[in-house]
Length: 143
Image (tube, rainbow, N blue to C red):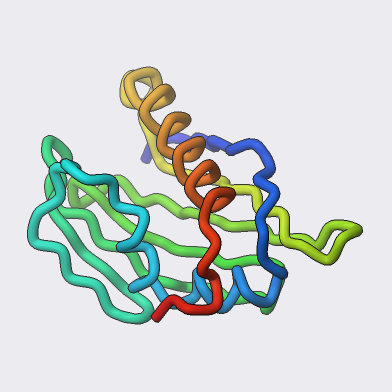
C-alpha cells in the first residue's frame, strides 16, 4: 500500500457560527450547491450521509460521512478507482467574533507518481471549496 499524502487548505473565515457550519456539512446533500457549472460529474446520487458519482477521468467515487465531533470536526471517507482510499477532514473552530473558521485536510493513499500528478488539482480543489464556503451566506436555509 502507498504512503498517506496530506493536503491542507488555508483557514477559511466564514459568515456563520461553528454550529451552523457543522449542521450544514453533516448533511452531504448540501454540497450539491458547490458543484461548479460544467463539471464533468455523472450518475450523481446524494443522500444525507453518503454520495456517489462518476467523474471523468477518475471513474466512480464513493463518499461516506464517518465521524462527527459536534462543532469541531467532520470526517468523510471515500474511495476512487476502487482502491485509492481518502479522507476529507473539516476542522471547525470559533474565532473571537463567534464566527466559524474552517480548515480542510485531504488525506489519501497515493504512490509517489500519483501524488506528483495530484498535488496541484487537489490543492486547487481545496482552495475552491474554502472560497465557496467563505462566499456562501445561506447556512441556515440549506436542506
